[in-house]
Image 1 (spheres, protein in one colour):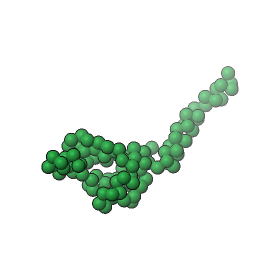
Image 2: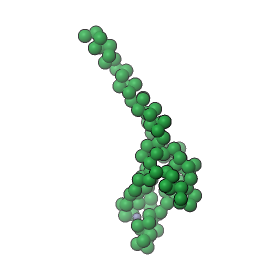
Image 3: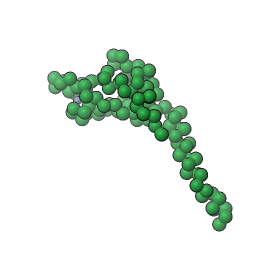
Image 4: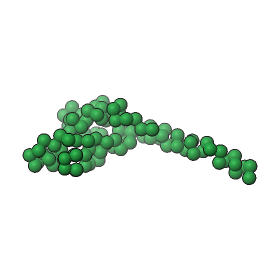
Length: 103
Ligand SMILES: [Zn+2]
């Protein structure tokens, strides 16, 4: 189960989807690519990230471009591997193996 955005920091995310809800532009970023924005660093919670970003496309059109929504692609490799390992385990548990031996 993925953690909710509230407790994930930018440094824990592998990829971030930043989408402008005004114009629909979206882009996938690596976290380090976002560190160049003011106040954005590895310890920035994802829920605070959207307030620190703005849409360059909307700004070009003279709009504030502040309706940004942020989505995590997946969190660190370590937690992703843990999630995958859990999936493998739960697939193995229903006793498929023992039924095969019995037949
Ligand atoms: Zn926009």
